[in-house]
Length: 506
Image (cartoon, rainbow, N blue to C red; front, side, top):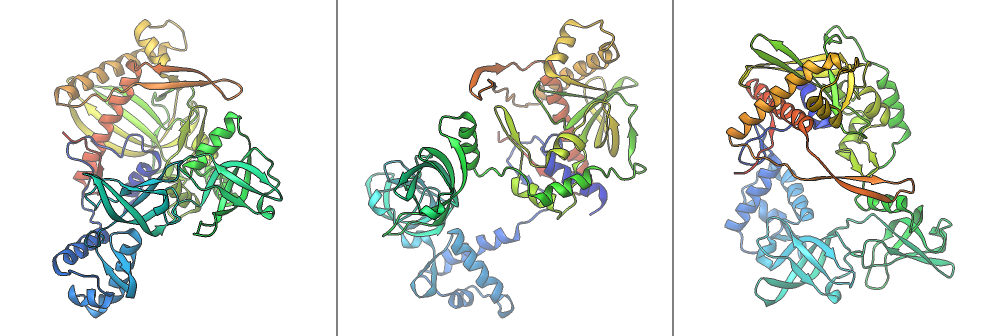
């Protein structure tokens, strides 16, 4: 894969701002990409349903399905993987069968504080949630992937069952309140759906005191004869502290916080290296600027607009994260595990260390930054005429907020600092409204959902909740990003490069 393709893909993965998504009509679609592993599962299941009426050993299955000797090892591993996933069930004698044929259902257990729960069936089952009585839980915990046998249906569409097997434990850690019990202790989970209290031997308490909120690692899962046993790995603080509540929630959802020393070391090293600029388009003299929220700390995208005869040339410039994050590096693997940055009311858990997310990859004003730039030529009616994509270098001229831009568009300004931007902002507004009208005329759906803004006081408590008013500046950025999505997707498609399309069903 060439540098052009590689840069496109890596920036799609790390930013998710303008390039990866394209509006269409039928659902997610991946061109020229076939998931062979998934097709193998589907084929195996289809043949099992068609040819096999009873559970069989792998050797029998292999023979029935015509698997060659050369493929037998791969087939055996595939069957074992499918059993772990729950699409097949392994029973006595090393035999495998279809869950539905044995009146079994696989799914995730959702617990209830009173001790019972519901198994939410995996997608391949066509059945409703299965109620599981407290006495039929078989030591399963909230979020475990389990096998449940349907034993009755007291009312139509409301099956009841018994958990007979735990396929996978999904609670390595949990947060709760420590309670002293002699030399030992118990942790009462904060999440009520975790109906098992966790026993903490004295040697595992880590000086936790009665009433403190702690993070516990489960060392032994519950059995018929004993509760889960854990070890305190971190003392979070007092239960009434708002920051402790935030930390509890982040841990509940498995949000990774902080970075290992090797990640920080690598980030510091690559942040200093901007490399050669010879192969990049020099846009440092072009009027580019960012438009973001009032409290934004990282600026991922900048915009520009030039007159082009009777039309415009729109520029959307995305921070070139791929320059700093090499494939299979420690940074790359860490970002892959995190998947995204996590934003909450008064903070953020970044996907990349802040020296990258808030510095080297943030398009700060008057700072030279590496970018991937898309230029789209439009006529006066908003019809796209041509697209160019370049590796580039920019120097943003200003950091705007949405409210600043909306006010300038509505009221104008005679301030010396504003004057250089007024005509460009006016032209951007005109183009964005033209694109907006054209988009709705072509049948686009307006997803203008209310967005809340939560203001936190110095103690970490909620001070005010207000609705964010979508103004002309929000619409401007929205239209420019949508136009860029579509232009980049078309460019990728024309070059026969695989492209993920996000599509809204009609």
